[in-house]
Length: 387
Image (cartoon, rainbow, N blue to C red; front, side, top):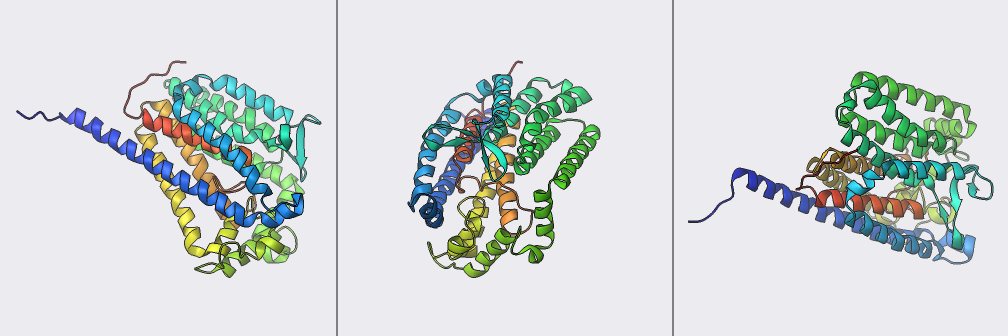
């Protein structure tokens, strides 16, 4: 007699196989993005590295150091049970708030172009606490809604306390004049609250109030208002606030379908001095063409689909929210960056995940990817998280 599994066991087996497949595809996608990022950074950052440190490999070498830290962080995130991070939600939240406060302390915080977003580290490195705040916010919301299932349907448990969790960090980040990170974390947190079951009747007014407050702050900031006007009328600000945007668009036009060739960009030499950071997607379009640009977008779409599948097959509510938050934040950040570079959104200082130069961003993003893989690995199991 041949034994065949019953419907329940067969269903668990298929779910496990689907989760494993999503995990493997996710690893391949992230690996391709990271390797491609190093190649493009090598191609893009030479002129700026020569100018700053008389070393065309300056930024590539620094990114390689951060990548080593990021791979260790990804390994830790993948191996440590994600429930442990959730149980550390409040200490981690407190640590991030302290780090965000330290940004404003003289000789500890680092001011770059009028923004205080970084902390000094040894060996000439710097650390951006708002990057760690991304994971802290996702982790805290996943823990709260994963353990307070009865409270999430009311105003206090569904809106007030989660709003306080986000507000404790966003209030400090926005005064760094980091509106990009504020919008990204706020939008991700709002979507997590929505899918967790926060009352829609309260969520919409709360979101509108937060958006209105942010819009008022942007209006009071002349630099940010200039960016909004440059977005609306780029030709009128072509030599000022829209300089980067206009030359990014020229890069896509120059690249055409097939591109000018790896390393052959003119924009990076004369017109896009910060091309290795927020505007690296424009150089991809110029050197490798529209096909490569679409390929990068496609990789992030696959990342999104894998993350959503992992979220849907997580072992518990906290895991589903953790995976959902990480997936949405990384893909939303990519979408915002690409939208800015292509002129679809006003300019914001958000790097392209896995590709742009930026040590803290790379390490934290790889760590979150590791946590996402850990959620996927436990997708077939059962686990109850207690407050």
